Length: 181
Image (cartoon, rainbow, N blue to C red; front, side):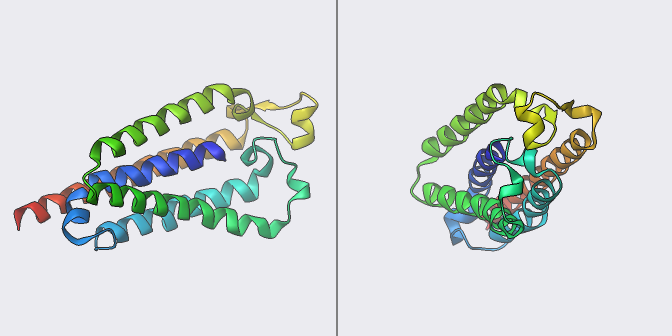
């Protein structure tokens, strides 16, 4: 899920941008900013990655890797990796905030958004099908919304969006508390 990784980096940077008042005042590990980022990574990002790698592995690898050749335990570092990417991006964004590099942070978020959009457009043929590794390379597959994968993808995207919005609202509220003291 390379597109998901790009999105998680952008989200982590976005969390740092929205939580900039607390990060500037108390550092990147100050509560509640860091706790909110951790909760999102562990409670939303990791379970979604686990589901897609475990239930739809060929699609998750975008039909580039045969899941039959990947050990089942490889899922664990992948799932943890997705969460760590978001946390690491938050930390990098927090360092940019503390260094007063807001324009760099905004540029990075915008660039990642463009990269994700281009990746979706380039790989739409792979993303829009549900099949096996062998089926994809044989030219077989079903449309995404004809099968459970499409609905699972929609639900996970809605859950992610809702969680991201919630975290950003809480970060903004915390920022107002920091500015008021």
